[in-house]
Amino acid sequence: MTNFQQKIEEQVGTFVRSVNELIRRAAIEALEQAVVVPGLTPVDSRPQARNAGRPRRKPGLAKKPAAPREPAELAALTERLYGAIVAQPGETMEVLAPAAGCAGKQLRVSIEQLLKAERVSKAGERRSTRYFPMGADGP
Image (cartoon, rainbow, N blue to C red):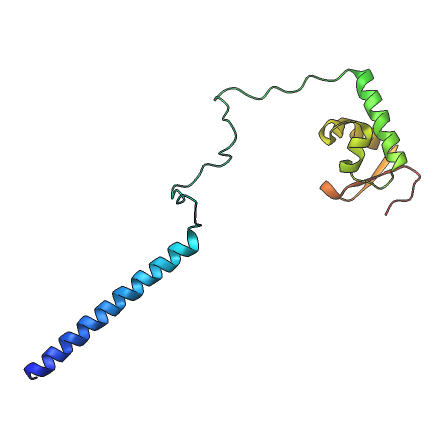
């Protein structure tokens, strides 16, 4: 190989390396622009803890269970729920709870009492459960 051919190969090799470096830099810039939103600080690369916004409970402190309701209060709540089911047959607990005047979680015992006493029937599962007064047509 002549001296002239070696110089050409060196020049071509240098050119190829510089083009590869330019392509790599352009790719990095394109990725940075796609990921970073103008005006925001860069995202921390550390993984965030689950429920990062909730305050942590001290170890050993269990959540206290709610005090049991008085039987008269529970009976009144059960009757309000039954009245809501009669007024709106085929509705979900999400609709019936406000009509009964409380949250759905508070009606768990009442609905179980109504189902056990066979005053109410249900159709569906979980959030799509619909309640019917006995004798009313269900789906």
